[in-house]
Length: 247
Image (cartoon, rainbow, N blue to C red):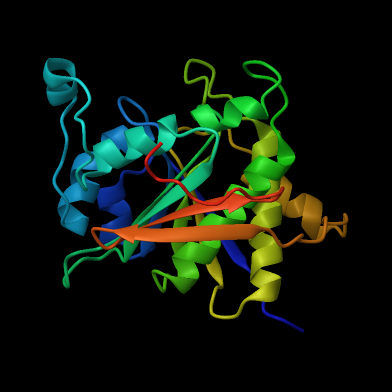
């Protein structure tokens, strides 16, 4: 019998605490910066991975630069604003003494590329989108960053005043993780990392453990290009038109 994927769920813990416990070795984050989870951890992530930090003040004073620089803030802004291509930024650590192997910035339901799939704000999420970006994020974490225990953020915006998560997104993310684990060895631990309680990770795990059918994984296409040692990976489960990073 194959080993079962060990899925943990932590809420309300900062990145510094997770690193002190050595419980994660990489981070898969949605690309929403500012006052959201990535924004709260951006300074520490930048320091830990060896990349320059970009402050909100710089954006407000100077606006968008003509050319990106390899900072987490600017890469997140680019990833979030990219359309219509669905592109992830795979950012390896630059420090040999880092406790993290890297960071992956993923599109989410607030990204411009998601608008082509959305039916309205807070509507039912698009399954193929949420499943595929989760699968590809795990693939890149394991195969490009050599991660053994990635931390995964929720891919939908959270109504923080009610601590409401899109439960369908959670089920898609859990399903993608289980399918990925069935196919690839060397991946046995995953941490769902949320800033607030209310995400139904345990319920999703129980749902599939009870024998409810998982949809089989349908292979899709990905294209990759590299700049500054960072890989930009565009996925496409429909007919692909290639990768254009100049958009």
